[in-house]
Image (cartoon, rainbow, N blue to C red; front, top):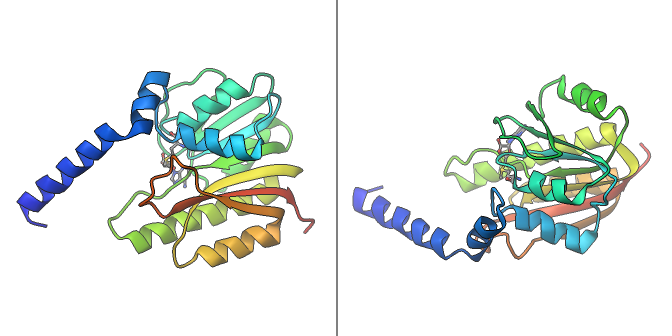
Length: 208
Ligand SMILES: C[S@@+](CC[C@H](N)C(=O)[O-])C[C@H]1O[C@@H](n2cnc3c(N)ncnc32)[C@H](O)[C@@H]1O
């Protein structure tokens, strides 16, 4: 890309960020990311974060979703996971680890000493600039999270995850439908219109 085009594009994003209502609101409310509003909207619609739940936040950095969970879960337990280090959040425990690591499942179960009520995942692969590839990589992560949920979620538990409306969307949808009794899709207003991201809300594991 030519330099003048690059400068114009980065100015465009700066202005867009400054005008973004959710970025302003997250600063006022002290949230670490505008993503907080996505979890708030998801929970307003599906009401899965109760005060006493055991909740796992996958792909938690920088912590917007964990902050929301930390306010709503008063007598349960919260574990946040990311491959990046995350600064501490009140009432949220953090493990720096990768969902694809063999040891991750055991570490989670050891922490809760039981199965979980809620798994939320906002995990996304680092962007490469190739939208199709980015979407496939993020949907692979979502697929891994669904597989993990079959091993660590209570039968009546809830699984919520980001995924992309890319070419492999139908494969992920079909895996979700064969894993859970109830499967919904929801795009929060706070998710940018131009983004192909949407969210899966699933509950009640099918008996395998
Ligand atoms: C969109 S950000 C999450 C934002 C967060 N929900 C918030 O509210 O601040 C996606 C995160 O997924 C994490 N991630 C990507 N692949 C992962 C993996 N294999 N295991 C754990 N975390 C992963 C990234 O490091 C990144 O921090």
